[in-house]
Image (cartoon, rainbow, N blue to C red):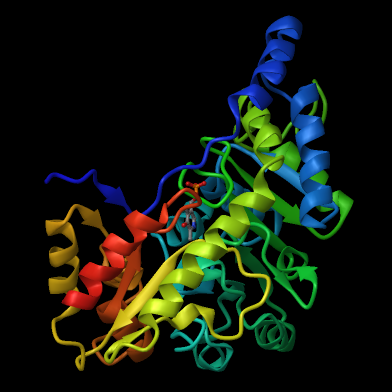
Length: 370
Ligand SMILES: *Cc1c(COP(=O)(O)O)cnc(C)c1O
């Protein structure tokens, strides 16, 4: 029996009935970009939902991060970041004009370990760029303490962290700025898109200007910006999608819960990101396969593929092991031992809001039978 493929992620779409009136409005008024009325409503609704005041909507998170770095004055020198992320994190640092320097991870959160940062700080260090990987909050207080002691900016790659809370508050309120991604495969999407969260209005307006070529008004430039504006169509998708977001988050939590119940007591397999995290968005469901499991992580991935289940080794290889970063900022074979171990063990299982129980059981049975 051939069974339909199950991919690691499946983009969520809003109800078409919620999108169409917004599209009709756009078709009527012919404002397609440049802070249109739908975008302004989306920005305001998003600000209410996320519980943060100053949001700049942008075309994608990569450009949003470049602009955040530019606005923070981090266009040269070194930026300490995590090697365990999507390559966009380091690309944004490089595109902004700085050089990524990779620090090791906390084995529990899979995020940057604040105690591994100090030894890497040099007179060239300008900023930290941590990632809330898989939506699990970084050690925000530990990172802030190191950054304050050395006068460094903290810019968060929050691409995975839509709607994540800590102590009842959005984690986006920390650091100098945070950048969300609304790419198709993220928890919340606008097909392509993103947002820069600032802590004050001046910074928000500066980001808005940088995303609009650096224009101050029709005759004057504040700075050399790029074009990173979000268009009205994406804003309509986002505004409509906000209606169903609580259900998306609870569906993701249900899938994660089912995996945890069935897989967390298997020898050689651990579910690292879930222990004690409240206010999580279940962006991904990573498992770690160590040497006491019957087969290797790579074999498990292949065995799942045999039944049409496409788990992914996010994020292996480490960014620090991919050219040109491997040569630019060499970690050395003995460096980054925690990150290296995690990258060799990680496998992300399929998780998305409409993953039905039967399909999920097919995945779980296959893992158990391996
Ligand atoms: C998806 C992703 C990005 C890039 O986001 P885009 O909106 O596609 O530019 C950056 N960082 C991480 C960790 C990501 O997963």
